[in-house]
Amino acid sequence: MAAKYFAISAATTTTLLTKDTNNTAVQHGGLISTIRVSNNHSSTAAVVSLLLERVSTARSTRTVNQTGGSGINKIIFDQENFVSQTDRIDIGDKVYDVGTGGVHGYVVALNPDSDNTKEIQINTSITITDDESFEFEKQNHYFIKELSIPAKTVFELDNVSFDINTYTLKLINTGSDNLTVRIE
Image 1 (spheres, rainbow, N blue to C red):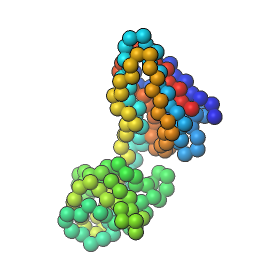
Image 2 (image 1 turned 135 degrees about the horizontal axis):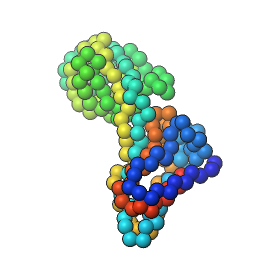
Image 3 (image 1 turned 90 degrees about the horizontal axis):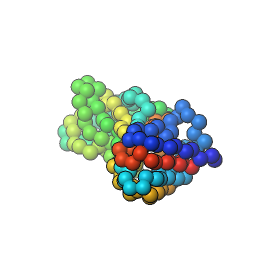
Image 4 (image 1 turned 180 degrees about the vertical axis):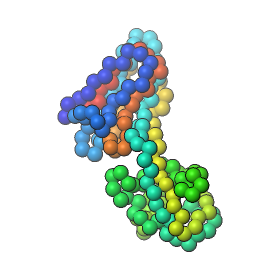
């Protein structure tokens, strides 16, 4: 596997990996052995964030398949949580009511009782009805947010894994003007 290098000479956002680039540094399934950020500046700290930015705004839709009621945070659907790579529910997805467009919360567990792969748990209690439709939207996620890397210091993040078909990996630099990034 070949390494990828980036020289960053200004406060900027740099796209490190996307599904559309030659990702020789990424193994099957989105596993990265190491991300190494070197602050080469002699005196200025680097302030960096590693962001997984969602590739698409497409939403997955599911239909409720249970008796309605209020105070519910575990929901069973007609469809499986995982239908395909592009039609799936993941922890952290934002949950919308199709009828009102309102946000119900975020998915905190899939199959929370280990007995139904069509069930999720969300972070809030809501009122639902049978045959109601929900949509699920992927969210941006930070591996690291606003980490200060002192001058002449290297930061390493090992064994990073994500779905490269769903997310783009970006580095946001708001500090040093002399960084190098190596991904292997």
